[in-house]
Length: 285
Image 1 (cartoon, one colour):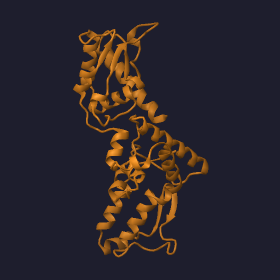
Image 2 (cartoon, rainbow, N blue to C red; image 1 turned 180 degrees about the vertical axis):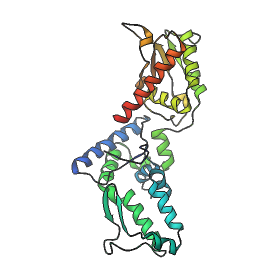
Image 3 (cartoon, rainbow, N blue to C red; image 1 turned 90 degrees about the horizontal axis):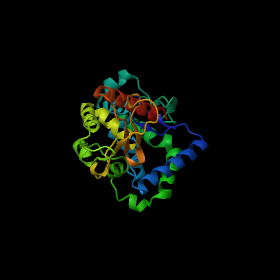
Image 4 (cartoon, rainbow, N blue to C red; image 1 turned 45 degrees about the vertical axis):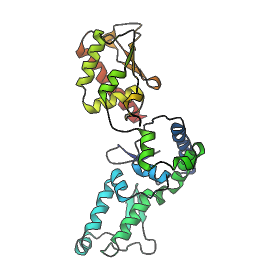
């Protein structure tokens, strides 16, 4: 459904979409609206421009830079002198999302000069962020406000709306430990002590992957880590040994089913496998 940036970390709306696609984006908007209405954090790694457009705030060049390297290129164009622009032989004909686009239909081969470079940058930005996605974004927005009251949502700034829906990146791992409760296990149980040693050895990115594995989202709720209450319980293993099984999670309740491993090394290996598999599943899903 989406167009991704070069690093495949941020999605954006496609410029080539059918009427059937527009229906899908309407339903996607409804789902996002339901998430906000029910105060659910969702994995929605869109650039800030999405939240600006929902609030009728015009995106800027900085927003474009967040999503694509084209933004940095356009920023450079704004700083070029006339002679540099002449040597670049740039025109108002561009390629975006695999399609050739004429930004000035009245003069397709119009060269970019010092006098019209702002016109070129504005037209390029407008195509990516607005005109090329007009149909699909209109349907997404219609679906979103099918659920949510537009006047109430517009009380947010774009940054606040993004924080409420997606969460924020301020992590307090010690608070996660303090808020964790146990079933069958207890805080001083050898497996639990081993678990926290393994967790502390994870890199910062792996800890964020663990949060995604546990809760279904990689960021922190807007009200902070206190909103995350992890429950660790003994995994129910019907056959074979615990060492052969990976941890499992129930994301809707932040429950971790943790096997009783015999060594820290085995736990570390199984935990890493679980995080890698979960991340790959989400990317491919």
